[in-house]
Length: 410
Image (cartoon, rainbow, N blue to C red):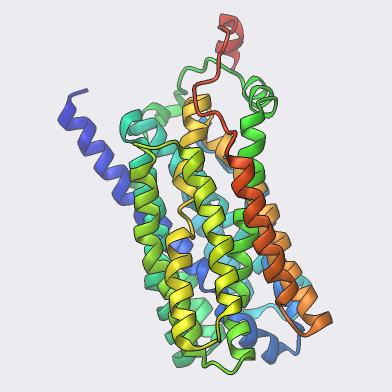
């Protein structure tokens, strides 16, 4: 393959992958705007809504493991098509679910499965297989920045749709928009997966999993990613209600989430670029510690639109900037053969944290009338994550050659 052909392939992968992540993550980041319209219309508590969002994050994390396995074995395009269809179905169900149980099944389980098939673990597997190692961290930063741009683009749109069409019709419109990911998946069809032909494997899935889970640095990355999920999903879902509780308008909440998305475009891209030059473990430690400082300053400062926008800008720089260095470290340590699957396991830890952050926010609010305790937990966890990322070793893992018959069996 010529150099020009490689660059054409890389451009196609980045364009289609970024567009898919923009849609998928853009829709997801606006779910906090539905908390009050849904609970008020249905007569539910905030914990009911938060529990469905918690199930969504847990479903996303669990399904992400299997989505990664399928993408590694059969290619990303088929997984993305399935995820797009589930996304549309889940949004439609979210709009018309009459009971908390059905709401949790659609807004939680279905949309969580859809996100597993249309976001980072699957897209990063394609990037890992098609982008040279020396540009991989940068390319992952581009994809993560696309997710942030989706938040900046889609959150105000979702606020406009809710105001103009009502919360139910807004979800139906977003369901139709999710189907745009189906034609975009065509651009991620990898030649090695066509016609049932499978790439050669040096490891079975079981061998790859045993190797990863016995490696301390993998465990530390998972612990740090747990904290990332706790912080960002708690803020993303509960921030609009927190601001409204303190007398600020819904427009301030919409703009704050949009600012997080805008500034995270720069933050994730910068993290990807810096990952080419600096130790990724140090980048991660800095991000987590900076989040703890930013949250502390936000809680200490008088609350006003200006302080909210400043906090949103700072948090935006740190929001998904953990994604490129974390996934790049996984690829650097273990290689790319099972990258989507291993990224899925790391992300599952992220989603357990997401479950705890979003559910605990609703649970403690309903019982104390305040989000203060959860804010304090988020600060403490930020310091913890900074410390556990420092000892992560980024070098390729020493690996003995596997028996040929086992490699072929994979």
